[in-house]
Structure formats: structure tokens, C-alpha cells
Amino acid sequence: MRAARCRRHLALLCGLLAALLLQPASAKERLFWLVRDLPPFTIFEGREKGQGVVDQLLPLLIGQMPEYDHSIVRVNRARGLQMLQDPSSFTCDPTLLWTPQRAEYVRFSMPSLGVLSGGLVLRKENQALVAPYLDGQQVDLHGMLSKTPLKLGIVAERSYGTQIDGILRQLPDTSLSRHYGNDATANLLQMQQLGRLRLVLGYWPEVRYLIQQQGGSLADYQFHPVQGVERYQFLHVGCSDSERGRAAVAHIDQLLPALRRDVLPALYARWLDPALQDDYLEESKRFFEAH
Image (tube, rainbow, N blue to C red; front, side, top):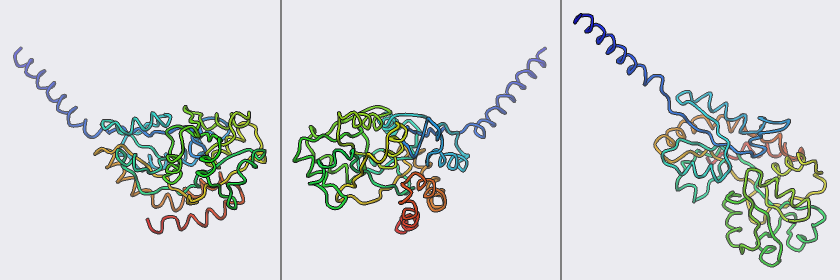
């Protein structure tokens, strides 16, 4: 009887040992990819669901990072930034603009994609309000908003790039109408269509998509780049600045050179005005010569 009990104990110990030996091989860290409804990068609903630039980029990254288990999580901008700031989380955002504030808690990849900078969106019926502040097609955003009672609709906690963010910080708070939520840009455009807001800050490819989704006509709108702002800004993948996040970025940096050269420009160009597509594809070849 004692021998049988010893055999049972031995079998149990062997089973536990086998489980312990197998565990490191099968247990992987889970990497959470943070995405929000942000056309033309991520599109959650409608005819072109899943056809955005990042919708198609993420499977390419995930397929080449088999050392992790991957989950894609939908968040709004505020929640996404909270998760990136949590040192215990293992999260990455594939559509981040670099800012000094974010660099305090995010490890950024190399630039992944050059995109057209944001600017002023208005309905053509309100063009006369902006005319005194135009130099060609570029608008003196600071001059206009500091000298008139006009309000500019913006998405709260969104970065529009360091140059535009710097202009916004110089303006009185009363000149900005901040909106929150998952559909903030779409809501701003609806307010503009109803005449409750005349000026909206936005990215024209995103705005083009949303106007068409809302059944509007692009012919009714005008877009003005902001004076003093570079034509293009650059997206990055940003991960929580932890040991795990830094390791993930190191791997992502190995994958991005080929993707940003051969894949991403064409995915983005299809969302531009047709007249801009060829110029963008040609200019994109020189984006990363210094990077």
C-alpha cells in the first residue's frame, strides 16, 4: 500500500514538473493595441469598415510579432492615454503623434507614416469671415481667433501636432469649443452644418470621409492649411514606457522601414483628394531620408 501511495505521489510530482516545464513555452505576454474610430486610419462601421490604413497595418505587425498574444481594444482618446500612462499595462497605440507631454510616458517608434497636417474647415457660405486672415490659401489662425469673437471647434485632448497645439495654447480659452466622446469630430461637423459652429479644426482626409458619411457635399466646404505649419506631420506607434513596451517598440522599429516604404503610403493616398494622390506618393519617397 505504501508503494502504491509513493507511485501516486511520484506521478503527481512528474505531472506538476511537466506542467511547469511547459508553461514558459506556452505563456505569452498579451499586447493590447489601442484603436479609436479615426478615419481614414481606423473605420469601425459602414461600407468601408476595416479598410482604413491602420486597420490593414495592424495584421501585418501582429503577424510578424509572434512572441506576443495580441488583442485589439477600442477606446476613446482620453481612455487610450490613461492606459498608456499606466506602467503596469502593456499597451500600444498605432496612431500617435509625438508631443513632449506624451514622451514622458510613451516610448515612440520611428515615424511610420507622413500625413497631411490639420487645418481650418468651414462651409463656403462663411468664407468671408476668414478672408481678411488669408495669405493665399493659408489662414492666420492665431490672428483670426485672437481678434474676432469667432469660436473654433476642436476635439478635447486631441493633439493636432506640436505646431498647431502651440498656436492653440496661445489663444484665450473662450475662442475654443472643446468636444469630447468617440464621435467628437463628426458631432462638430454636424453642429457646423446646423449653423451652431462656423469653424472646425480637422484633418481634411478625415473630414472628407465624415462629410460624405453624413450625406453632405464636399463642394459646400473649404479647407485652409494653417500659416506657419508644415505640410506633413508623422504618425508613430507608441507603447507604454515600460520594459515590455520598450521591447515591443524595438521589434516594431525593425518592421516599420519596409512597411513605411512599400505599403503605408499607398494605403493612405487612396483617401486623399484624387488631385493630391500622385504628388503625395512622390513626396512620400523622401519623407524618411533623414530618419
